[in-house]
Length: 286
Length: 209
Image (cartoon, rainbow over all chains, first blue to last red; front, top):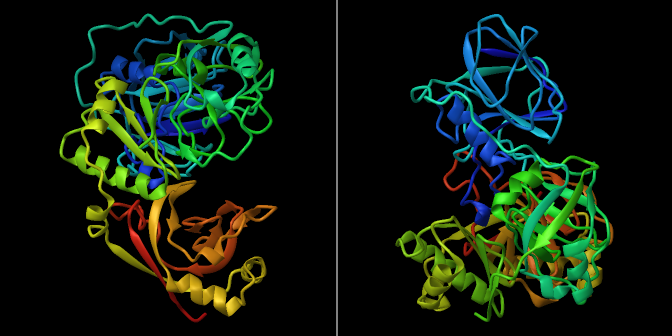
């Protein structure tokens, strides 16, 4: 068992979410930075989609009442076990009685802590993910909560350190126009591809909210609500784009001007408030 | 269907002429997927005028487009297959007077007309288990409230535009409240958890408070 001494600003249980239920109004949710969750699980010999902890700006302190093997990925953050520093992206053994501290990341937002055996918890619609928009899945961790370890499903991997690319100073996201690029002025599309945006503090698991040049609509009538994909760049009436992340609504009534490349969504998930962000607009796909 | 739009690298948005076409296409796609004809497809999301098809990296826009072109979308064949749900409503919503004023009908006539129609779930969204029901009386098409409520009680039966909706959970909302129901709209211990899925037929029966 693990005791949560401090949960930090926001720590949730996440896995690969609930794909395939959008027609019932249930979004995918799950880890915002899925490659980091997968890597953390691989490092401790778990199936890639095992439930793990997703922290937001660190601040997590755990006391282990039993021995465990953990790995930390995503936003690089200081990791200490009983005051001794350990590296990220490598399995770390924690003995019974020890206290693990995960500090504020030096870059990025979300650090993942996988536990060998995963976390034993009740699944909701096949997933342990906390969906903060739909209020599905377990509540975010609070100080004093306990977390039960699951059973290891496979052997430890032969590799004991994974090399990952460092998170960039300026976030550049490849994006393709559409499906509603034609609802905006040509000028606005050019602006989207050239402008320097800034990530705002209002960003969360639902979406990245950006400050910067507003986009102007050429068509002003109301768009009937339509299905939304992860990475969609939606433009509300104030013209400031929102990039939808894991807990995004299933449908929405504001036009989506572009969609971020799936491989760049994890970069968006790690963009910090105040960080500069640009779109590298690519040619339309159809 | 009229137009195919790319919704990023893993999505295709199919534009339809109207909601009945959306419903027929969604049902046809679900059947095709159940029959194994849409490998790699993750989600089929019907909405007011579109069906969003999302897929993983084993499929592509062109594969989904080819599959779409080979489908025979016929609404009439499918309507028979949809099951019907009866929802008991106590018509005492806070906006009943406002709906009566907007529609130029008496409260009693609003209630009678709302209960007389047979509805179908066009699509879902907004919240898990929230269904947009169509087929209501044309006189009951009313706009949303100017100021949304921060708290709409669970089970509220409400109107907005051409739609009737029922709030599965308490939450914010801008629809006009005409009544409430105790029907279990969202139950995680049930398979599927949503009482109302796209295509479900719905009849409202009046219940005394």
